[in-house]
Length: 494
Ligand code: SAH
Image (cartoon, rainbow, N blue to C red; front, side, top):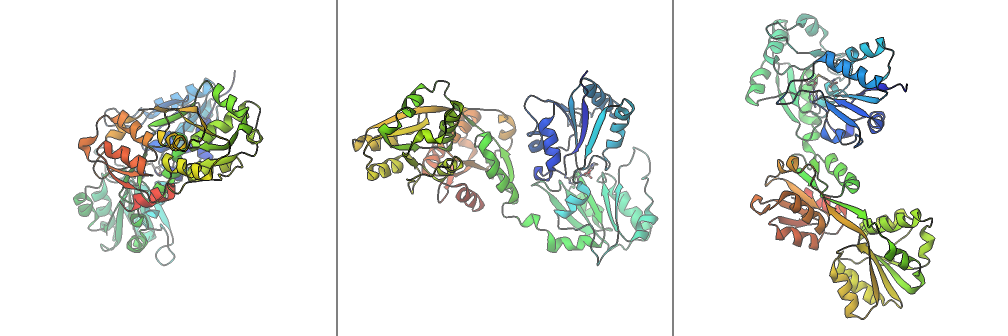
């Protein structure tokens, strides 16, 4: 029988960028993923689509799976021969019961590994501008659970903690915050000792509350501080006012919905997140090569008849190139033909295959591309490789100047509506929806239905995209050029 194994993976504190490289690799190979409540959706999105996902964490409407059942589940899946990832918030061995989960596996001789994670105990303060140690302030740091069993007193040795004069970090302590602060004060801590809570640390909606050990319970209750939160007590908390870099990120507080197809969303989402935005990916279109590529093959067999090959999207370039490769050819099949691209994104895709566009219009739409081609005055035919239902402005421009062309369709765009409900919950007048093509607008509206009454704001990559968004009642801002950089600038200004 094939032996399975269990990898205990630390998912980090919430920001998907804080998952380790090793953790990500394990997730991508997983056949079964057993995860907790505090694991972010962006990290779960890395799990292969065909892997089994089991949520054992507590949700609003059901209780968590008891620990012994989780242990049994891990064992059972491993004995079935599966590659099991047990994904836990922060670091699995820090108040994560990771040790308990390994005991049963160890007794049954199941293979296991632990991939440490970045713990919220250090990362949440870090993102609030609180270094957990600083030579001027302390020489130790202590991590304590504030979890209190119902009806039982807190099991914390306060005098010993106060004597260390170190930074104190309490996890699971929101419910027992008054008891923690009172315990520290009774053990002789200076009432003016700086203290802080960091809720949802490292997440875009992170919130920091600063006070002193004497005032923190009251201030936290006024601010309605909620779990998950890290509580920090120590002089290092006084540094937060100067060091809180996170709240100063340019897009902090903004929610952006990215509508690009899944395989192309990554860069823009990562960059927006790094600038502090809360990003939700809603890939409402998907491009697929047409099943029948006879027309493209016929054109490719006579490249010498053409003087220009025109691409109006990166997806077109990719489809054409992959088709060449899959039929045993490569870019040399294009010969010395001149290339035209609608914009820098399409040109960038060409460059990935060692090609450069000879023509790119300054305004990235079909009409301007058509006009530029007419000026370039091709001597032979023009070959256009693009999606079904491409813009007519391009072909009209060529027709008006009597330039012969073949408009060959090589891929199609599908609208998808997965996760529409989750996205609907984010739609407020403050939310910004980023559209990178008119078809993403159509896909969005197709999934959401009529959105006119919601007064949504859209950041659009170009005029055509903005015109489509305006039809559906969006108030739009258009990027100064059709590039992701300009679109991100445009979001920053909204
Ligand atoms: N193993 C985890 C801790 C599990 S105990 C780790 O290493 O981070 C759960 C507690 O962790 C929560 O009650 C809270 O105190 C803390 N926590 C987890 N995620 C957090 C976050 N994003 N921000 C602040 N505190 C967090």
